[in-house]
Image (cartoon, rainbow, N blue to C red; front, side, top):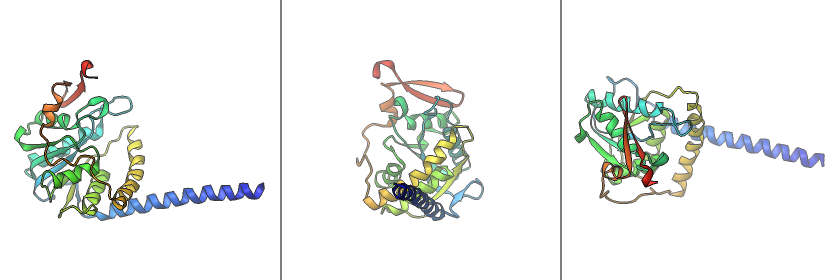
Length: 246
């Protein structure tokens, strides 16, 4: 009996150590891949035609509070565009995310409220995951060299995916939005370690984008309007579902 317990304890400990090692290795490879290509200084980043803004919701999933990740990505995209570092912003996110919220439309209108012209945007409402966003950026929107706009950890993962999925990309860089500092943000940082393991699973298994359309017949704004209500909170725009559409 004691031998069985010892064996079980060793098995559990060995499994935990193996999982931790895998997570650390995946984190190392993803992080080191983009070393020297991530920027925080607006003056030092080179000029690009396109910035790929990765979507998120303006409110947190837990507690429905203002999402700092969202605001900080909006800040970063605004800085890049107004500094003349990018000419257009490809916003890629989920057009039917948390409680039906349209990530793409929220981000676009939040940037328009800050003075970015409407003709500066390319909208992709089918960027359900980071993998979808980078695949569609190249295969659907013909972007082969661009600036990823998101938090540092997200830029690292997006660049690694784009460069290891067999896509025709080159000279990818990232512009780091400020990290969130809220008490709940640590859940996102913990989740990222698992997301990086998933990166390698997706690559090794040949995971494809959930959406393989060549074109989107409706823009994200066209999809949003019949089903959602537009609400302005300062310089952030939030779309939520109408009760009749649920």
